[in-house]
Image 1 (cartoon, rainbow, N blue to C red):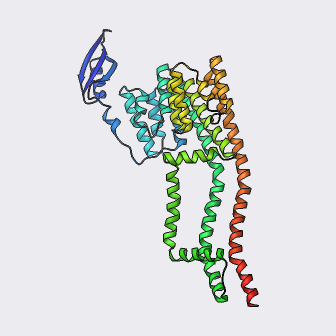
Image 2 (cartoon, rainbow, N blue to C red):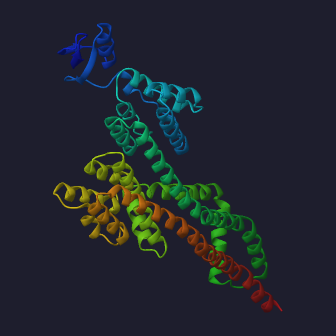
Image 3 (tube, one colour):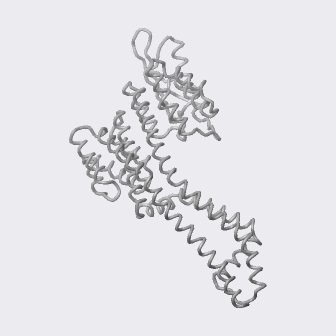
Length: 405
């Protein structure tokens, strides 16, 4: 593998070389042995990243909280004066997650071998997001890596908190729905057969609703394993479907057109976009790159497409706020107005930060309201479920009893 290298010799002069080596690490070692230093290093045709970069660390998992802790600790240690390689070594020793230890150890090796930190991060796209890598790169280029890491850790914390609030609001209704399904199956297996035998002893014609429930019970009793597999398959299939491009688009469309949920969705996406864009711009990331990365964070949906369009229009010299003005049903007017004010005052990142804080607080309040709204709706749903079953299975008992008497 050939590398094009600009070498600074001990006497201060510079020299261009083409060096054959297995990895760029070997190039650095060779130059250092000569008492010289590498100014720039580019891979020639057929060149690639070092062998360590091609290692696939499968099977590991790093929680969001662990990534946040890593980022905060790294920022604190760099602020305290530790070198990047030393800070990574300390984090590697302290980590209890084996996969995280492997990742950090690999990053430490890369940094010691002369690679920039963001180049090392790029080899772990499933661990470090484009946002994380971009802000790290901006921090390295500006000489303020610790500040960039501090900003990205705050962004990650805000995003994680927002996600937890949304998920927390959905836990209660999810548990209720699962419980109803389980109770329904148990009643079909144990309760309905007993009532069906009672009806059979009375004779007579049963109402349609009762006959349907008894037929469902007979099917479930005779095919318990099949029913369990079908229920699991439906749930699994639904979860898979909503993660597909079409499924997520349908779910997002439905959410946007639901009362309360629609406004919550818009504010959640606006908060995420504002927080990400603010963090990137405050770290020194160029506007077009910041818009592109924010689009990736928001997702390849209608909200992300607006950001793609924004990037194209900014390239043509238009203001960022102009694009959002065209989509008031997706991004609220406050979002657009604050960006416009930021563009007028030269403080876009600060305005976006204020927008993010506002919508994050509003989302928190709305999730509390959502729980209040969902609770009575669930009670009505449970009441309807119990009522239908009671009418279908208990009413025939009275009618048959009166017939016999």
